[in-house]
Every structure is written in structure tokens, then in C-alpha cells.
Amino acid sequence: MRNVTELTCCYGCGVCTAACPHALLDLVHDRDGFYRPRMLHPDRCTACGQCLRVCAFLAEDPPAVEPLACRAVRHADPAVRLLASSGGAAPALAEALFRQGYAVCGVRYDAAARRAGHVVARRPAEFAACTGSKYLQSYTVDAFAVLRNASAKVAFVGTPCQIASLRRLVALRRAEERTVLVDFFCHGVPSALLWESYVRRMEHRCGTIRRVAWRSKCREAAEAAETLARGLRPVQTASWSDSYRMTLVGDRATLSGRAADSRLFYDLFLGDYCLGRACYERCPYRGFRSAADLRLGDLWAAASYGEREGVSTLSALTPRGEQLVGALGNCELDPLSPDDARAGQMMCNARRPRMARAVMAALRAGLPLGAIHLLLVRPDRLLGSLFRRITRLIES
Ligand SMILES: Cc1cc2nc3c(=O)[nH]c(=O)nc-3n(C[C@H](O)[C@H](O)[C@H](O)COP(=O)(O)OP(=O)(O)OC[C@H]3O[C@@H](n4cnc5c(N)ncnc54)[C@H](O)[C@@H]3O)c2cc1C
Ligand code: SF4
Ligand code: SF4
Ligand code: SF4
Image (cartoon, rainbow, N blue to C red; front, side, top):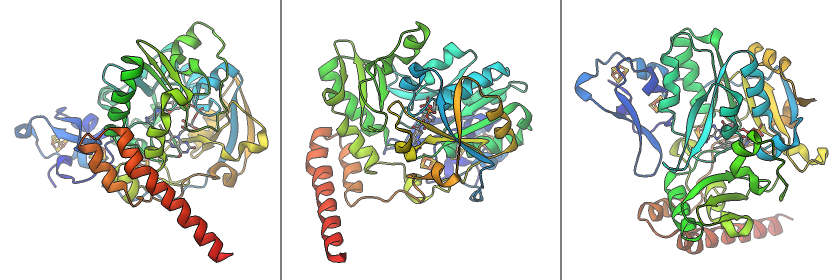
């Protein structure tokens, strides 16, 4: 293989674009709405193989890692917990990293481009917009180019596949001493076609969407950066365990709760109807398989904590990661067993529901999301639950 553009499937992590010494690669959406590398100047490729070397999709699967220690984490500031997706471990980590002179690369929603994208934050205020999960595949090209700088001290937060390729690039650049890698238990990423279709539908009601909060625990979550910067106290409107929330701030209105029709988005995403091909066929990063120093997650065993604002898990996978946990301030840490940390997480590849291919075809054809949900997803889910009930009845 001459370069990564010959691959027929990949993670779309974009690390090859930062590895190419001649900056010949970009990321573009394929027809299913997932990022793939594209060659900008085929005649200039020297077949040096750097892009192939860093690609985690081409590498051997990582071994299972036994975490050095796992903790339940709650940011001490309830306002930060309300704006983060679980307990605010990621913002607490970012604060510790800034104190140690790192820039922190996280994900912000770019309303103009209607996409999530990694950005490099050099100050805490710049990282505020990265608080909270954006359940989309992120565009990484501009931010990951920071690794071309031979002296930058940077920490990256990303999906396990993004982090696995970054680990290989960091090793190639001998940048281990000045890089920290953080990933999370990952469900998968949905097709950008789903997001575009959802945004088109909702913009009829609220005007051009300026800000978005996924799994919002309060309406202010969509304005996380401004809320934190202005020292405002968000008001809780839903429990963190409600994974189907969304808040959209449009030109004409703010939509939250039922008004945001978020079921249309989450039924397709969390129902696994339109995940990336690798999320179904080749994700070796389930459980504690990871190339990161630290792994974040939701503490789904948190019922015992009686917590409405959310609790994160933070698992140290390397001595570097454990050192960083020691530097955390401004949060409560409780020891956790690895079994409790991974409780409720996906442990193998996502399973394609019967209607997944039909849903993807309908998204490609531009059918309205309401129709796709009504005609394909709802009947499939109803049938699935009926089938499960009958099986349970027969088994009992
Ligand atoms: C696509 C996706 C799938 C996920 N699946 C699971 C799962 O199955 N189980 C689970 O426990 N947790 C999952 N998470 C992580 C979870 O949503 C929380 O982010 C995590 O529990 C940490 O929350 P927090 O409160 O500590 O901090 P938060 O502030 O909520 O942390 C979010 C961090 O993730 C980064 N980030 C946000 N969006 C993206 C993105 N699109 N791509 C890469 N990085 C991003 C941000 O920069 C931030 O640093 C997923 C996240 C994403 C983006
Ligand atoms: S490095 Fe990432 S984007 Fe590039 S080919 Fe490999 S998986 Fe795809
Ligand atoms: S083979 Fe080398 S020159 Fe060609 S795209 Fe890959 S990194 Fe760039
Ligand atoms: S499920 Fe696996 S392949 Fe899919 S985005 Fe997450 S880490 Fe990458």
C-alpha cells in the first residue's frame, strides 16, 4: 500500500494528516458521513510510509490493560458538573494540565460548519467550550497539526481510536515526555448525515442553530463557555442519567426537553442504526483496551451515589496517568474497582440492528428524519422488544 488513501475503511481519526511531512492529506466525509483521508496532491506523495506507520487501524490490536487505579470523580463546583456530561472529571483534568503548562486539545461544536472539531486550548477559558460530550465524529486536522511543533506540551482528549493513532505519532516524534493522552469508554460515533438531517429539521423551528448541548442537564449547558466565564449558576432541569436530552439555541428560540425532538437523534445514534463501520466491525478499544494514559467514563454504577448531577470514572492506565490523578485539585475522588468502572459499558463491537443498512440508505437519499424514524426505526425497535419479551416468556 502506497499511502492511507488506499484503505477501504478506517477510523477517520485524522492523525495521518498530521504525520504526512508534506501536509498532503485532508479529512473529508465519505458517502455515509464518516471522515476518511483524502489526498490533496497525488503527484507529490513520496510513498514515505509515515501515514501508514501512525495509523491505528492498520496496527495490531492493543492488549487488554489492567488499570493501575480507578476512581469515581465529582468536580467540586456543581456548576461545572451541570455543564459536563458526567461528573466533570475532564474539566478537572484540564485545570490540572493547564497548571502544569500543558495546552489541552478537546472538542468544541462549530455552529457555522455544523460539526464538532478538536481545538487546542491554551487557557482554561478557551477550554470551557470543550466541556461536555459532542456526540459526533470530530474533525481533527487543524488541531492535531500542533504535533508538528517540536516543543509543544499538549494533552489530547479524544475517542480511543483517535488516541491510539496519536500514541503512534507521539512515539514517532519522540514526544512522549511532553504529551498526555486521555480517552473514554466509547459507544461509537454517528453518521454526520444523521446530524445534518436533525439540524435541518430543528432549524425550521428555532432558526439557525448557534449552540448545542448533548445530554444537557440544564438549558444553560449549551452556553457552557459563557456560563462559566460569567460565573453564572446553571439551574438543573434534568438528571444526568437521562441520556436522551438535547438543548439547541437557535436565532429564534431555545429548544430543550421534548421540544428538541431529541429522540429522533438518540434513537438512531444509541440504537446503533448509523455508527461508523469500524464501530461495528473493528473496534479493539472496548473494556480497558486503550493506548491512553487515562480513561474517562460515566459511572453507571452511580445509583449508589444518589447523585443527580453526574459522576465520572477516571482510570489511570499508565504511571503518567496516575501521576496526573495525584495532581488533580478541585474535585472529590473515591476509589473504585475496575469492575465498577466498566459496569454498563459496551464490551464488544456494536451490533447492527436489522434496519441499519436501510436507515443509512434513507439518510443518504435525504429522506426526512421524521419519516425514517416512523417507518424504519420505530417498527424495528417495537419488533425487537416484542421478540425479547416472547423469548423471556418462553425461557421462563
Ligand atoms: C462519541 C462519544 C461516545 C461516548 N461513549 C461513551 C460510552 O459509551 N460510555 C461512557 O462512559 N462514556 C462515553 N463517552 C464519554 C462521556 O460522554 C463523557 O464525556 C465522559 O464520561 C467524561 O465526562 P466528564 O463529565 O468527565 O467531562 P466532559 O466535559 O463531559 O468531557 C468531555 C470530553 O470529551 C471531549 N469530547 C467531546 N466531544 C468529543 C468528540 N466528539 N470526540 C472526541 N472527544 C470529545 C471534550 O473535549 C471533553 O474533554 C462518549 C463520548 C463521546 C464524544
Ligand atoms: S490514521 Fe486515522 S484517518 Fe488516517 S487512515 Fe488511519 S484511521 Fe484513517
Ligand atoms: S506516504 Fe508519505 S508523502 Fe505520501 S501521503 Fe503518506 S505521509 Fe504523505
Ligand atoms: S467505537 Fe471504537 S471505532 Fe468507533 S469511534 Fe469509538 S473508538 Fe473509534
